[in-house]
Image (tube, rainbow, N blue to C red; front, side, top):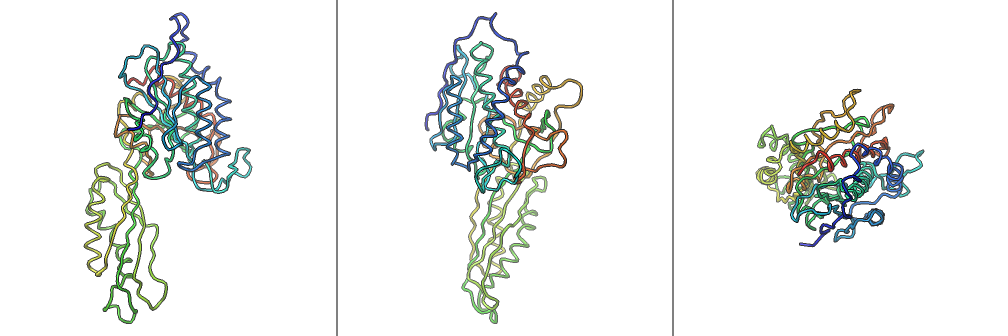
Length: 420
């Protein structure tokens, strides 16, 4: 196990009379808001793909060092961890963790009129990871101050994770490096363009889905289309598998698991009168429940074997494990709701709303194999926004007031509501 970010003591606590009340938390967050928006825009102009986030990591490290913290870069050179441990913390006290993902997507930024449009063709922060990063950075800055004044009473860990968009996800890099050692509870937010800024969406239980990638290859001797009975007709075989396997798969799995096999690519042959020797299918398996995700590969193997045998085709499956569902723990959701309501609930409207389960994958799920926690959907839609700028689209953007909301929410969890 690689040693990472051993807890570092914060500055000695100030006398009780000097401790500022949590009531001024909003003022402390707002003191950083302009800087955090500028930081987010800088990341947006300079997006970096998974495990290539060297500039992003360097900027984070420099800012955390300037705040008197001791960040440690992950062994791969991208992503980092930093602990804030109040003076007098007993050894072995569980840490409260906050996670941000720092990578971008391999798509073009279509916001032609934006002053912070990506400067790199084919690279864009079109999923809001720049916002997540700014939120956790801001939380670190606020909590470093709180530790210095004696207001922070539990140790916290900030996780700036690389490669969330690269299955099975950079969360595994963090975990392999020991990033979940000592963590008792973990939180994250993800931008949601359907939720209005100033609100969050919460759900107990699964909030995302499992997502795996499947590559199925069929082989045979090939031959002339005039004599299909003397060879293996791979075009027919791959066509039947493409049509029949999803249906058979769904009938073998508990329907309550919400398992879905959908093909995205099929390839076979190069001439009208030649039966090919090789064919391929490629697609994704998505699943709403952890039990179904664990069972899917074995069922897939069995069904492919039976269907391929019908057409005398040799077969192989490359089943790429992606991520399990993110399953939000009930106590963690209650803490998020309490913190959000306490900080932003003023009677003028709801600040917490129910959210549905997404079929998208999210590698935050790997952290929840090691500690309870929750992923909240952070509202980023402006009140006058027409339509919805969807995730993973080149025109995606946010109402940047969401950054301060996220920082205040996380800081309130650490200071008042998120007990491990």
